Image 1: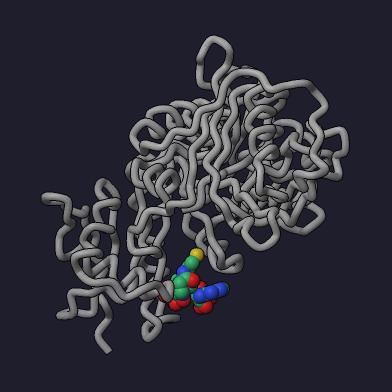
Image 2: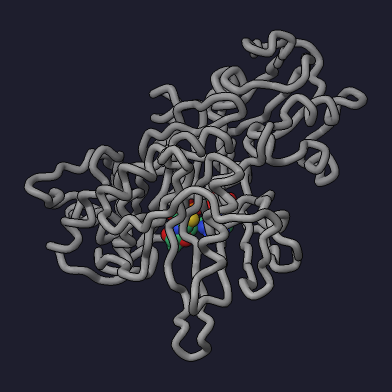
Length: 421
Ligand SMILES: CC(C)(COP(=O)(O)OP(=O)(O)OC[C@H]1O[C@@H](n2cnc3c(N)ncnc32)[C@H](O)[C@@H]1OP(=O)(O)O)[C@@H](O)C(=O)NCCC(=O)NCCS
């Protein structure tokens, strides 16, 4: 059998349609995920969303449709106290007849190598395949949690409402309001990512490849403003379950960002005071939402299962560790093992200068030893290194080193990525 050739290209868009290579790539990607079979004209419009991204494919020539796909783009990733250039990866799929032949290995290794050469500090992805990506150095870095509110039970502690709310129907007006709010809010949560224009489009309008670019007409965008008229938060919601049969339907939160506690309270007050609605759910909330504390009865909120969300692969240890800020002054030597080489080494992390932490190579004895995925898990402060010691995923080489590392890496707010990709 001929070994497929790997090719990388940038989609070209002419008059609202993408080029033939992108159409073939998109067709292959949807098929690998058991998606809908769409005609070329629709695929060409879907491919427009990939403009500016890198598309990689494995091609069994002369077939113009790849047998394996991967898509990536440059994104800003929030770390505690700053953000770094990151390689965001999605669309990893292999034709069902070509699996387990190392095609993902080739595409992903190539993408990681190119991203490292281009200066990305880390690569990130989300995955439903929990056992897959550690072999390429990805560690689970953030979780999300489902929240469910029984609106009949939800009595707010403080009096309201305050400020004003507006339902924004026009997508361009909604984007102009929500994007700057998200840009500010995302800087608070390590693991949050800047969103692409196409991600905003999908979020606000709900038109994506899986529904043939049909807008989700049940979606609504609501913006909250303070008494001076300044936007302070927004929620994107949709009716998940009709009120028709029960008289008490379910509202789903697609995205919610609030810059102040008042904005947060008032957006939730709005969600919980809708006629015809008995339940509000949010499946991608952070694991430390203050929501139960808003109510006289915290049991109005059921905290659901927490799920793995963002996987992080360190590509440049000095760039990533040097870009974040640390709450304690200390110095530790971290030994990182990494078969792909990107994070491998003995690294001395010195945080005595809190504004300019130093990361240098060090030949001395390590305080802690860990594989690359463990570094990816702990670097945002979302996973406690002491837990990974107990799981045998991090080795403590000097007494108390894991506790010192935990204090160094602690983040001012919980790691959270609310954007599926
Ligand atoms: C999952 C998928 C991308 C793997 O692609 P692939 O080309 O078959 O993977 P490779 O042949 O490069 O395998 C690389 C390694 O991963 C392992 N692996 C492959 N799929 C795996 C899975 N689903 N879970 C755990 N390990 C897996 C292989 O055994 C191999 O390990 P080895 O090197 O120790 O032998 C492919 O099966 C697929 O397209 N599935 C449907 C779409 C999908 O699930 N995409 C990923 C969504 S996050």
